Length: 127
Image 1 (cartoon, rainbow, N blue to C red):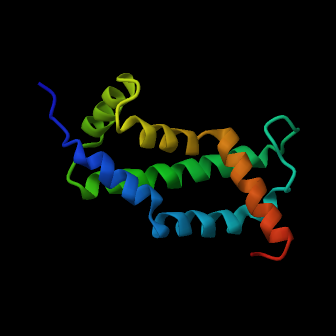
Image 2 (cartoon, rainbow, N blue to C red):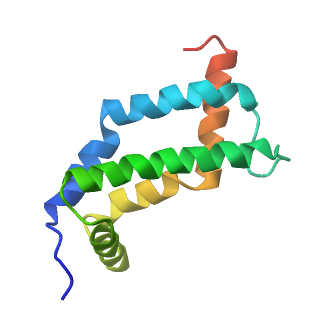
């Protein structure tokens, strides 16, 4: 029988994901790479090959932070992933929303949009 995950972990995951520290870490990282992007980059525009390398670095950092959260909670990663899959398979479970947000954040299109926004802010004076 698979190890059960306390459903409260999803509320803690949401707090972790939306915490200022998590957001600030990503903002700092994105600013450090924004010079590689233009503010008008989009999924439908031609893209530099370099973008995929930066995206892979982003995903590794992003997944690393999520893995650290899971481990800090004393959970096995495979067990947690199975619990997430169950929540998502239930459609509109109370926890599915945060899991979908986390998934969407790691998608390439979302990454490009984020980098274009950061590049635009940096081009406008770094606010």
